[in-house]
Length: 245
Picture 1 (cartoon, rainbow, N blue to C red):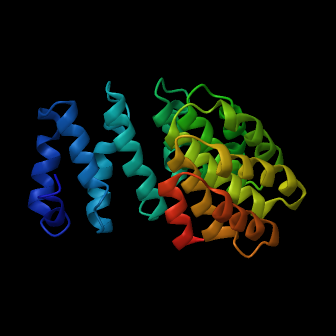
Picture 2: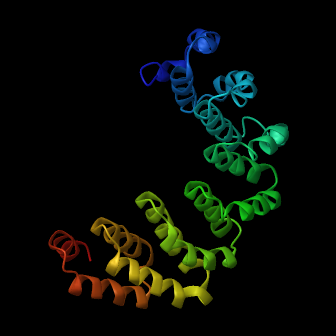
């Protein structure tokens, strides 16, 4: 779909044919079509695709539903459509069997009703899906300025299983350090532990990079970065730190 995407906005006939042929394909095809639709820059073209969106949001395939939701949230962010027009679909998606669909619908809900989104996010922070729990945590910390959730993240971090979840949580810990001064001692201790002991070694590098990029002016963090540079023993990481820190 990357091959045809650049022409979709400018060629209404091609976009119309793509919409017409959408139902003839399987799950993979439909998913790829929505991936192309998400890159549309022309608001009129996006508006044309909205006619198919309600149907796709009910597709049996979670992959297709997720892709359609990503498109819809993008259209809402571009103000091509109003989130209030999709309230029923949003509420249904928050009960979806797919955690990924729930997460994207949660973002849509934020644009329609931020208070309701924060309430829903709170219920998702302990979800078994790390992806959904961290997305909800991010929304509460960055948009809701919720220090309770930031404190809960400290407890949850050691329980995260996937490296990608841990990296995302590191970013949130750094964000929380900026937002909540009262939590800084506990957050700094957690970040220090991650930067010094996390395995595999490249996870320690992620933590150091976040600290360097976003908190290097903080005296406590500056001292930690200096300590990392002096005390790291992993050969490859030590070499990187000599140049980076």
